[in-house]
Image 1 (cartoon, helix red, strand yellow):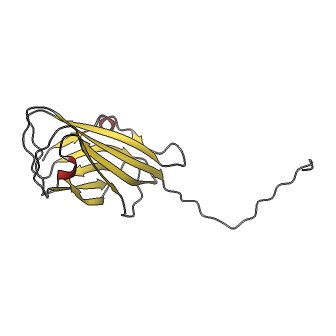
Image 2: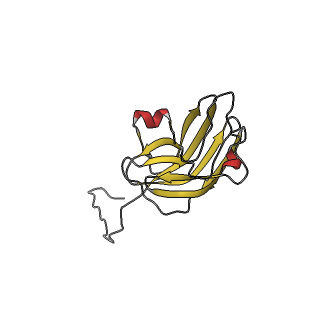
Image 3: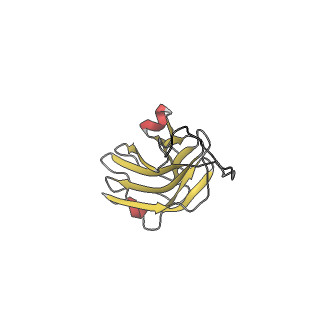
Length: 160
């Protein structure tokens, strides 16, 4: 088992939406030349801020990983598997991107790690060159506000 980390993960920055609208964030990990991904490897892309949701993701690679058709990996946030069947043959081909909408209910806690876990179903071939795997996340704030039913009134000395 090996861990591969993005610069964002290593620096420890938390991913948070900076507005009320969902925002795309992108993270990359480079697998060194001559290295093969094997069962139980983890690709750690980032850490999340508290009270956020991942709505969609894209995953791509700039060179072939040489995986077999049917190999899968898990996309995990904290301890929640948000996609248990990431088809590696969908993104492991050079310049192809795989994407999905997340249907699993989840809310991030501060410091939750977003990672691709190769689990027990992935073996890639060693390549002569480095490969860069890029994860794009559509992140939104999880609103905890509830409507209280109160009426807001305003009075002004000015006529309308």
